Amino acid sequence: MKCNELINKICWGLKIYFAYGFLMSIFIQITILLIINVIILPIYILYRPLYQWIFQRVTEVYMMYFPLVFYYINGNRIYVSGDKMIENANAIWISNHSHWVDFVPVCLVAPKCGRIGSMRYFMKDDIKKIPFIGFGFYMMDSIYLKRNFQLDQHHINETFKRFRNKYYPFWLIIFPEGTRAKPEKIVEAQKYCLEHKLPIYKNLLNPRHTGLFVSLKQLRNVVPYVYDITLGYPNTVSLASCFCPGEGVNIHMNVNRIDVKDIPEDENEFKQWLSNIWKHKDELVDYYKENGHFPGHEELYPLKFTWADFTSYMSQECFSLP
Image 1 (cartoon, one colour):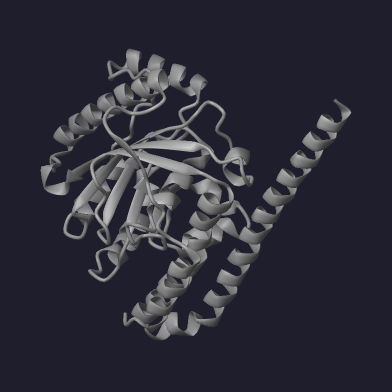
Image 2 (image 1 turned 135 degrees about the vertical axis):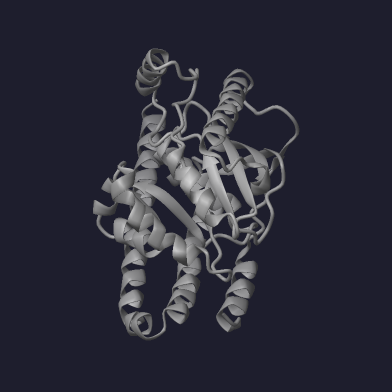
């Protein structure tokens, strides 16, 4: 018994060690990213398109680290059902927001879709206060929101000007619920929806339509698809289970690929459309909780990213033209 306890303590210590090392490596890489950004800052002043191209390549190198660690070292796997995601195509990604780890499935599917360095998020304004990470996401053109559209509108408009460049690759990732759907928040949301005669969801929060509506209004010409993503996790999922070696979890994802042309442009019709999307998503989450998977055929999503692929990819990227 004592031997087993000793082994458990050693294993726990190794997990803490590797998790700490992983977090430290993130801070080191972000620091390097910021240093490179300072070095190329004169290019930003002289010719911004070239600066954006260089920073995009540097970001791709940095972001490739995450799927490699999540998949090969930590053992996370993602099972996908529903529609196929199109490679090398811009898209808006909308998803339920249930855990801190919701960025992990994005990182796991992005390499195959050619968007590993092109993920832009709508994020809470508080995140920008986190040392290194906040500034890093800002430089990657993620958009920090104050939850007040009048205050956020100018920043959104300025960022979307860059997005509308036909040579600018991106996935814009939006969590319309605005915050994680924790049990106590779901109860609060249900009371609010009941009082205001809004649709009530069993497993989700009521979606906010403004950010997605404005995004589609401004980006329709450069975004062919919206990916309606529903995520499912085992009850044991945590930051530790996703970050520690060998502790990986099986993540389930259902993809509903929607052609932008099929999405209403009138705001009232759009709100009803989003409500219908969320109703179906709520049913999918309910199905997952009962069965441990989503309906239909699921496949293990291939990372298809070996170290040989990494070397080949980097060679191509370094010598490709903007």
